[in-house]
Length: 169
Image 1 (cartoon, one colour):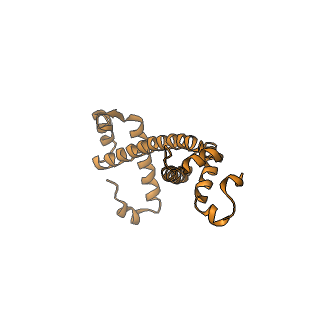
Image 2 (cartoon, one colour):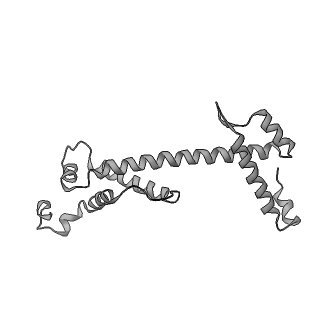
Image 3 (cartoon, rainbow, N blue to C red):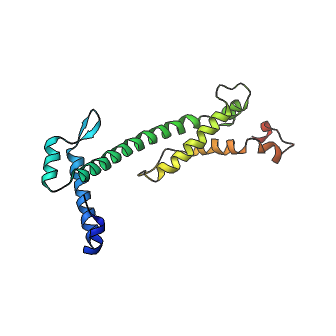
């Protein structure tokens, strides 16, 4: 196990050296780990070789956990990004005036409240995913138009009491 407290007194470069070693260990484990019934794991040969390189079982286990988490995070990001893009496409279909008006009718197949909740959650998910995305996202213009329409539900009549929705177009 890396003794960080001892390193504070030993050298100003202690953390840099040890973190570099830990990064190397994680890279080695990522290259050698295999998918098993309980997830990513090392073979006994790999585990023993790392022990012979003076890594403790605790360090190897911690690094294996980091590698597992990184792979799971990457898979989670890919799945969430794909789901978000698909939901943006589907929900964008309600952006047009006629499709949106069908949502506001009592007895609509999908209640407007459900669509509004999905739009809010996809918007929040996209804000988080943007921190990890590389490159451009899907075309969100119609989705943003729908979001704007949903934000205005209920305030349109109070802002323009003499104008009906049909006259707005």
